[in-house]
Image (tube, rainbow, N blue to C red):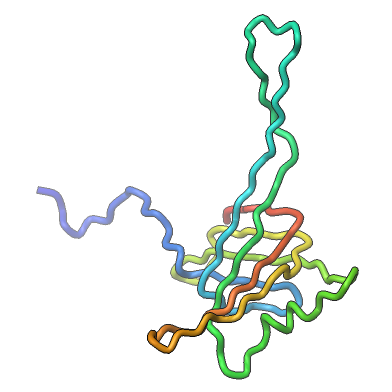
Length: 152
């Protein structure tokens, strides 16, 4: 019979509910949800006219990054997301570094995603419904020009 108090040596998946978002000059903002940490390549298809296999060759092309969507509860007196969007003016935008960290139980970063030249693209206020008792959630969408992921 196995020892019931013995610690498992099998690594456990990391929970995704403990994270921080550093939003450039705005500092840390408490978001409920982060999504869109995606990177992909466009694809080039090419076939030589003298290729005897009658097939196309596929090669990677331009790297693309998804927009990052951040959601948070609206708090009384907190207009930080709308203030962040208000900094965008025609032909003038402050592009900055945004850092998202997945933390362990001791608040130490396990994984860090760094967005280069990020700026607010869209802010959505909450939807309202008198039949529910849900929390008011606002959404911030960030565009950016690069995404790096590091593991600590």
